[in-house]
Length: 397
Image (cartoon, rainbow, N blue to C red; front, side):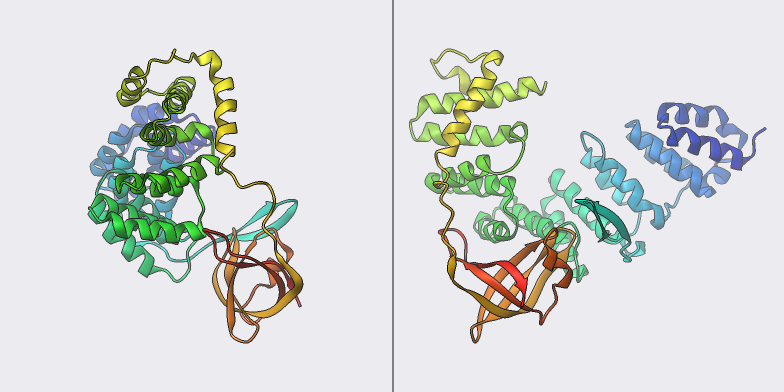
């Protein structure tokens, strides 16, 4: 008879070799040698077994395992287990939501670990979010994805008030969930204003898409089209923009541009077929309303090229906006909004009492010296239609 220690070591070895199905079989065959209490009190077995159950998608068994062995999950390991759900190709947010409730958020650690990462051949320290911040990030996301919008709104507000410093732009994502929850709760005006503010900091295609959706719902199709085109031209895999393509198709139909609308619906359908995803009935139904000849999957590359050319026609001409080159300005960093693994941003005081926004990437040399009171030289990038002026090309004075 193997000891409990040997039993736990064998389970750990199988998991390290990624033989998760074998882990479950080994546990099933050997668990009767020990009492449920013995297993439940062994934190190593508990951690490895829940890991294996997550890896093999045996989600219901996780909760049965916890109940059977009367487990109280260790806060120290909880964040690691939670992150395993996010590594799955398709996240089951209902399970994540339930899993988050297995631990009291107040019991979770607020300490932030620092690890060393390599960027462009240079090793740099990177601070990780605390277990408590991770919990809020997962729980609010799970609440939103499972359509518990009032709870998501309330908890996201608590999250924003709970930390002085955020990681991975979590403050942006909490603010976005607040805005989108407001939309689903019937307050689209506030949601739109808040999403537009978020776009100033995080110009992501899916936020532009959300803004476009609200404008369309409000009947402002011109602005909806503008933001939808910005989103399709923005960085991001086209395969994940199949819903955005449908939005553009709907807006083109409203403009009576039938052939372009048909081609956007077709691209959305063909991308789904290529990825072996289901084609929604709404897309098939919309395509059946047109009299054009259906586009086959073999024509997908040609269709992509054609529509990319169409989208790029809405981009400003490739003449970069003129910068204020009369002379470099000088000033002092007056306030820092964020300084994390992605870079830093804030405001510079210059020319008496003027204030100007700046942002520097984590790869820029000056990032190591960013601090309130630092004297800097910079150029001014003038304001455009949808952006305020900002300081660029920062150097220490």
